[in-house]
Length: 55
Ligand SMILES: [Zn+2]
Ligand SMILES: [Zn+2]
Image 1 (spheres, rainbow, N blue to C red):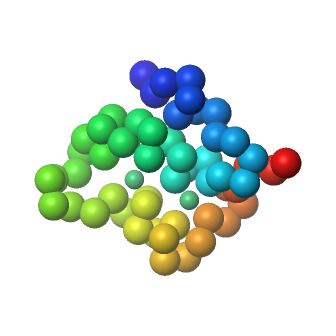
Image 2: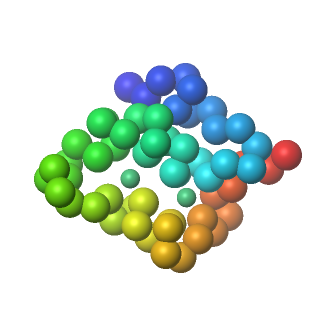
């Protein structure tokens, strides 16, 4: 289970990127040690869409 912090990004943060940052081990456990997370790479390259937490 992700921690409470991982599930509660502050305003201005991306829900997905926050979760992946603070629950990294769990969210990335399906990846190999040198494999990039497609979800994180997508956000890095294409932006965060509408997943930014509003103020
Ligand atoms: Zn993001
Ligand atoms: Zn990720």
